[in-house]
Amino acid sequence: MAARIDFASLSLMDALDLAVLIEDEAKERYEEFAAQMDQHRTPDAAKFFRLMAVNEAKHGQELADRRSQLFGGVTPTVTRAMVFEVEAPDYDQARAFMSPRQAMKAALASEVKAHAFFVAALPSLKDAKVRALFEELRDEEVQHQALVKAELAKLPPDSGLSDDDFVDEPTAQ
Amino acid sequence: MSATMTTPGEFQAKDYKSDLKPIWCPGCGDYSVVQGIYRALAAVGRPPHEVAFISGIGCSSRIPGYTTAYGFNTVHGRALPIAQGIKLANPDLLVLAAGGDGDGFSIGGGHIAHLIRRNIDITYIVMDNQIYGLTKGQLSPTSQKGRTTCTSPYGSLENPVNPLLYVLAYGAGFVAQASPTDLAGMAATLEEAIRYPGFAFVNVQSPCVTYGEEAQQIKGLKAISESLSAIGHDPADRLAAMDLAQHYGEKLHLGVFYKNPEPPPTYDALIRERQAQLSQGALPKERILDLFIKK
Image (cartoon, rainbow over all chains, first blue to last red; front, side):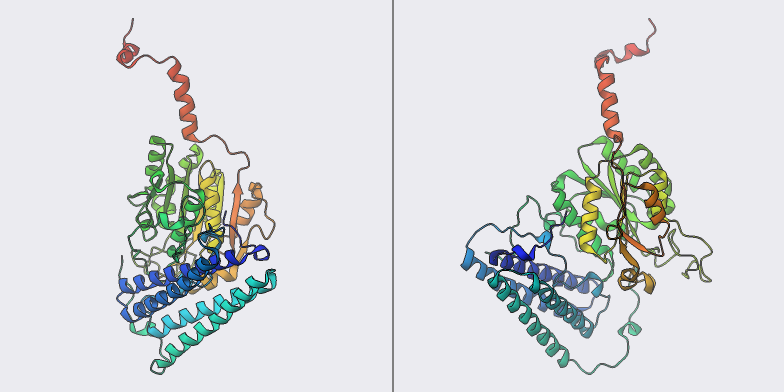
């Protein structure tokens, strides 16, 4: 059975491990999305999803390094089975022939979702250090949202037309 | 420490993920289903080489190739008899079968009853999207009445098959429903199905993002979904399960409808028992012909 996160008993080591796993899941999902876009010949969206995967990996590595400095090689007690689409975009966010704008909006929705996760967890936390970490992670999600919004702002103005009006339906597999 | 951590437990979800990249349409519900299967298998903890994954034909039937288990993408509607043969030939294997609603309830519909009555110990996962997606959107056995497709341009005149009532009526010992609207719940349900000793059926409402209707997409499914445990359903109550199953297509009940609290012996267990009985008086191999010679 999928283990649930007991926020009240979360130690700083557990919290760092959890944060690494959340980034890891998001990185993998963006890589999957990039592969899906490659498969459907949508290189611009694939490029953006790869950029997101790199960012998630970088953030995950920073957290992993911090964990390593504080706790060395102590065996983790939290598992990937506890993490379900916290920062990873939901599978139904992907679409064939996504425009860069759609891809960025999907990523933005995921950053908003991750922010909501940390906000919702805060009242249950007992350990002051864990609380401080979660507040930090919550604030980082706001920064990530700002980064995606900045990328969105670089795009030409939205034509207001649906991208679906300009694509052929996917070919039979 | 690497960003990818090793976690407690011998197997992780990634151990069941093959290098083959899925070619489903982006947004397809089957991406969540295969993720749920990876996680359920990791939780059960059987090594990939002890798992056989059998499918029919259709978008969803590509699923064995995306796992590291032994796989057989068979012929249309025939996943179950082949899965049955594999289970009986090697009862130690953990056998999963998968397919779509067309594969399972149209061309393959006749097979389900026989696996249920024999209680073959396999888990059958149907990815129910109410359409033939691979062949570009024809009416399927679970399509709603009135549905307009390329084969029903004026709207379907047929009532849909109810997969849940279908298997409950035949006496399946484990019947559940899941959906990509709740990935954690789906992984838990699949794990419970795999652990059930006998024929286990999981209907997964897996939206077709290309040919499915708006109401059948994740947002629409979320609006009609209801957790069976949250409404206090007792999975040991078969009649209550049948009552709830009647709402298929109107409500999306998620979780276990029915789980036989006293699972009967599986078919392969009965075979082994019979073999043990017969072997007591069996002749040596070189004297087998004596059985056919009148003395």
